[in-house]
Amino acid sequence: MTTTARASIHVDATPDAVWHAITDPATIARFLFGTRVVTDWTEGSPIVYRGEWEGEPYEDKGTILEFVPNERFVSSYYSPLSGKPDVPESYQTVSYLLAADGDGTLVTITQDGCADDAEAQRMGDNWAMTLGSLKSVVEES
Image (tube, rainbow, N blue to C red; front, side, top):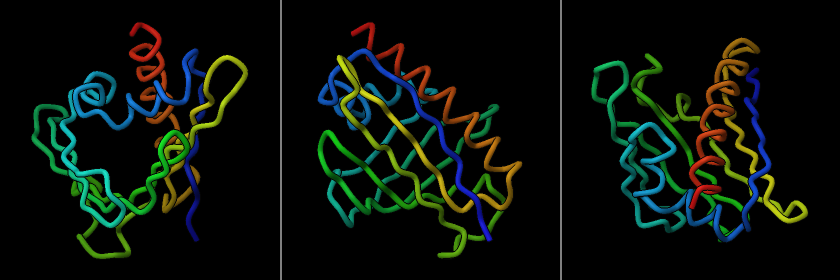
């Protein structure tokens, strides 16, 4: 059995502005710790995340599963840093969900496939930090 990590935040911007931020490689690098994203943003296409974590280079990867502008972006996700083998069972699903929320946008990120509640909490905390950075980047634009 696995558990799902979840984090949400209200961003004082339109869904269109938030969507741009989560799909524009230059903006992604600003809120996702310098990560460089390579993809063509088409369902079924690969997505690769490259960067450096604690002085070590990494390359995480996945496949775009759903891509609905201004609503949701879902991909499979695998990181060698997980210590798990690169096999289908090691991939998780990460979802960015956007919903109009008054004058802004509610952004929710979920990551399934967490081994236990502790991992789900850790990943949820990481996503909460990422969302805080996203909010800052979008609202200052």
